Image (cartoon, rainbow, N blue to C red; front, side, top):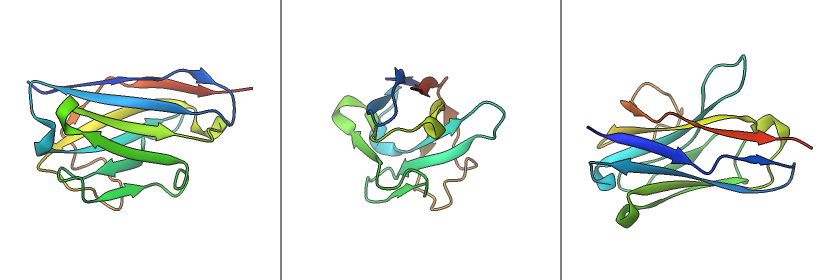
Amino acid sequence: QLQLVESGGDSVRPGESLRLSCTLSAFTLDDYGIGWFRQAPGKEREGVSCVSNSGASKNYANSVKGRFTISRDNAKNTVYLQMNSLNPEDTAVYYCAAQYLGGCPRSLSRQPYTYWGQGTQVTVSS
């Protein structure tokens, strides 16, 4: 059964950077589109970024465009989310999700994604 494990969450100060990792087990990353989502306390889960299974398509939420970068290393079965210039509004639990032979919806909708990780906490505070 496919499992997703997120890591890299931490507590940082505004302006600092973090890199989140999402590692797949039991299946080959090449076959899966991956999305990153986040959920802040009292708010709905929102799409942050995604990458298609081919890697050709990437999308970002307006709130993170220019600060976050998604990448994939199929050899390591891992997708990364590099987060720069973090601010307190980025505080949330970050989840990765996988979709078999998945694209990367421009809407960053949750609906296409079948498999979800348990999340990793990112806290940005001075």
